[in-house]
Length: 235
Image (cartoon, rainbow, N blue to C red; front, side):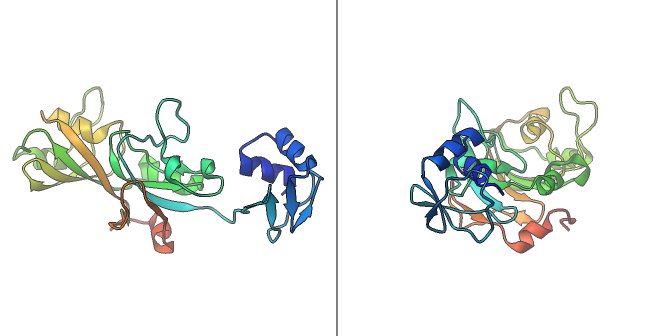
């Protein structure tokens, strides 16, 4: 990779600005000042900018984050803080959420820069299961589980929802597993049976379960097994 392209990516600036920084003697490669923007960077080179090391990324990256309330999953939002705030990683802005959560929904978010991998999670044809812990305003009615298992009619939708699995924990707390990702689906499913969701927390995506060690706002890299589980059936 050209040095100016690498600097531009690392600093999140244009190639022209990166070139200016290089010519201003602010970049060293293996301890030597390099002023040539077209310098060919090799994976083993050590690059510093103003004395700070810049890490050359090797291969795609995969993380799980325990998303707190009040953050959005888009990588750029003028009105709200984004989940990228929590990711202390080089060129974090290149990561995106594989399956977003609403601003007021908490729990498991998968962050990656591997577009094909995230597509296998979000594409409707892969039917990737997602499990949510749902807190309800009113006690769940006895027939809700059976209705969800059959599929229900959401407002302004042509087709029924796919069969969903409901496990009652307490009268106002349930665990719901769905295999599609319609807009605000969980909230709309309960609205369709006359209830209201007051808390929503995602626990699982496919074969990946939120690590109980992670406090809200904390994250960790996915394991090889977790990464490989995407694209395989979850059962």
